[in-house]
Image: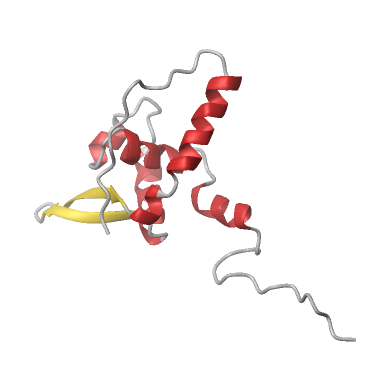
Length: 129
């Protein structure tokens, strides 16, 4: 008898067909969504601006997370200076689709973690293709 519901193949480069597992492979550590938050809500674009966040992301981790976000198509890197090379990072339309995830996390935190503060005003992200 033929199996009518064969198990679908894993998407290339991922460990399963589970969408949650695959999203977590991209943004599921304690730093990546903070970088996205800073791009999206704080209007940060330059390396030093990300480092000034209160969570104090180590420089090697920041560099790795920006590369990972760029490779996943969530962030676009644009050079604004050649010598020495300096870049700015911008959220892409794909990255901007994480807005709802960030909002849900913030709402959950407000509801369940005493003392958290949500900024009164958020910047509109500068989205780049």
